[in-house]
Picture (tube, rainbow, N blue to C red):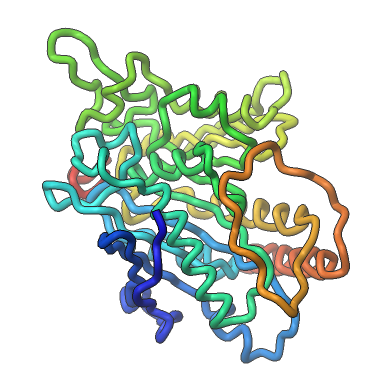
Length: 374
């Protein structure tokens, strides 16, 4: 599908309260969808500070859960965006027959009539492309963008699906699915390397950490509510999904490094082509729609992934011309060449300064109703 921008909220892109953000609207074949764009103060005033460098636009693509709203994700990640100088793009899901807004993310939630009618990977990808194109006109971000996708529950399923898709956009450099992930092992086997940080509630009874699948028997239902995972004859646990990502990311034969903390247990892949991590929050259920206990560790991880992506960029375009739109469908493992031209060296320097700045700042510084949390 080809999406075009109908209206944008650029007249007031940096309000103090994200609730004041105006929706950006896009249309395709008569279908109209919306998303919101938050620009942190540091970037909103970029061209007022006399800066002449050209930086890569960092973006957090934040996807709400079933029956959720973009505002929840904007508030959840606003602090992270401010510190990392990253734009947040928060699309809005499509309403189903029950007027709950959600995503076609295959394994969740199959009771929704949107599951067979909407290509939400295409929509959220197009939302990023449209926003980036507009922002490049409004401001001075002239180098290719880097995006980390995140989402909760139904949004976590879509985040995982985007990361595993054949047509994964080249700008996607990381994924942080929370409370939801894809169950089909075949998707992981065909996936290209990508930095991934999974989060899941150890006491989640909605999207169970042991996985959701058909319970068998005469009823033929799922072992999880809302028929989550009902098409799967076998359950894929969140640990199993981590191991599948570890294989896709070329992690070494050594077992993952484990760490037990008071609030969570952690697994980290060893000798991987891309960062591969899993956090299981011991006593957490399925209640991360508005708040998320892993924001701090996710911020550290996102900062590292953004910096790595900026330093790994082989070449930056001339500041005299706008870059071509992102190329979809890039596959294969990422190159780790550090051969860069003059503008590439500038980008590396800026990335290093941003990293040092974020480190300095850091040094100075279950459940609810089912319809509200999926």
